[in-house]
Image (cartoon, rainbow, N blue to C red):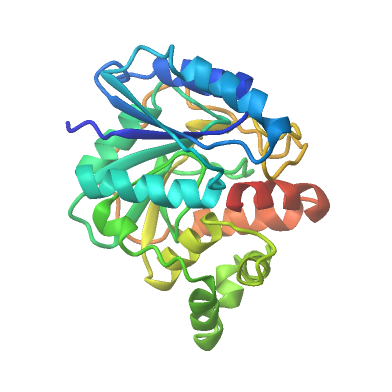
Amino acid sequence: MTLSPIALFVHNRPKHTQKTVEALQKNNFAQESELFIFSDSWKNEEARKKVEEVREYIKTISGFKNVTITERKENWGLANSIISGVTEIVNKYGRIIVLEDDLVTSPFFLEYMNEALDLYEKEEKIISLHGYIYPVKEKLPETFFLKGADCWGWATWKRGWDLFEPDGKKLLTELEKRNLTKEFDFDGNFHFTKMLKKQTAGLTNSWAIRWYASAFLKNKLTLYPGKSLVQNIGQDMSGTHEGNSAVYQTAMADKKISIGSIEIMENRKAREAIADHFKSINPGIFGRVIKKIFK
């Protein structure tokens, strides 16, 4: 099994960063994996102390094959930092596993990602792998595919990231031209199109909504686990795009996810389960969670 480099994007949350790293250290294959940490700079003097705390901590990290730290001299913002960092790593190594500083992983997260990166490396239909799954009511298969891409603990190859389109206006125009906005919005059950419109209007700087749209328009698939391998701990008003809700919380996998041979096509039942989940949750509460995911 080829072990992929791990990219971790951090900013000004030392406690969250530490929890994220400590969980990652407990993963199978962590000690044999290379960790690349991208530390964004402070926006203002008020944020400087927390950024410096994070930077002091990440210099102490061990438990990986190598730890390479990139400290931004200026504040790039999350979107620019992720787009640049992911591009740098995939261009050099051909594949990547991506985490942010508020994502706690199951001990089986890296094993799932690396096995799936190997298994589906040559499958052009598959653009990425994802570690988080929404807390739907229905029982999901051990692994399945959905159309598009996602952003809470994910992995891809250079061939996948090469399809990322940074121009949100181009993506929005194509969605509307092809009458795909309803499907893009999970049959009208969540306003992803509206989020893309806000990005194009400069009201948000979401890289994730552009990643989803890029994959969706190319009719590409992402692999998901039936039980989540990621938990978000950032819904506590501490993040760049804050929220405060437990709606996102889901049971974490406590055993290895089997990466088997499944049909490479979207699982319609899983898609319907997620659409029903979007529909059933109070949008005022759940909307903040989804905005956090895609911002």
